[in-house]
Amino acid sequence: MKISWHSHSCFELEESMDILIDPYIEKNPVARARVSDFNPDIIAVTHAHADHLGNAGEIARRTGCLVIAIAEVARYLTGLGARAEGMNIGGSLLVGEGVFHMTPALHSSGVTELDPAMYGGLAAGYVIDDGIRVYHAGDTGLFSDMKLIGELYRPEVAMLPIGGRYTMGPREAAIATSWIRPHVAIPMHYNTNSSVIQDPTEFQNLVETLCDTEVLIMDIGESVEY
Ligand code: ZN
Image (cartoon, rainbow, N blue to C red; front, side, top):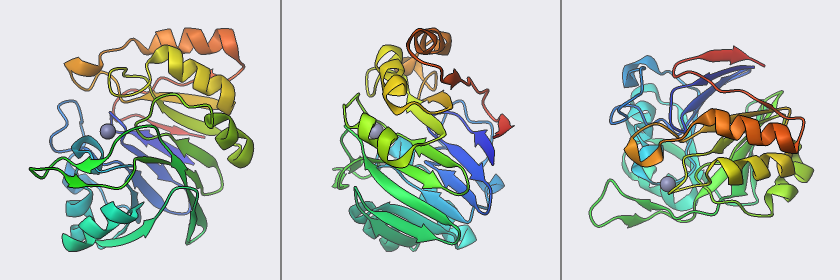
């Protein structure tokens, strides 16, 4: 599987399909890609906040790709003219050769690009199984059911927020890693703007003291094969 990081929580997974997660591109001060660069088969949105929903509607309308989101966000995207499928926490959706499991996330949700913000259901994460099992935690605080996510889906790769303030910081994310026990953990949701400044090596060093997981610190725009 080719895994690319486009900064913040935006990842692209390419195996049997091109899956784009949380495409916060245009208003993202550190993203290097442009919205027009993306031609995914699927977009998975973890929650409705503008730094996650991002350009999902625009990319979906241009390409005709499918968007997966929690029911309330899927309905909003359908209203924007996107082809969207809703699901909910604890559920699974089979798309092509891939399976999307929607996991809980301890966070709020709401369409913050609208004023007032529209109810966006609950924030979520995904375990995506497209040959390799990848857990993208979305925005979340630490919660003990991450142990269950590890036990139930056995993700090989985990993407975890470390920015602090809105999500887990390095210490909480290191504990999450030790509970989930993936082969590889990739930090996300940091150094996008001044409110989420973190040193990812702090996360890396803490994980080393807790478990055997390898921490992979990616550069913006970098791709790795897993
Ligand atoms: Zn959020």
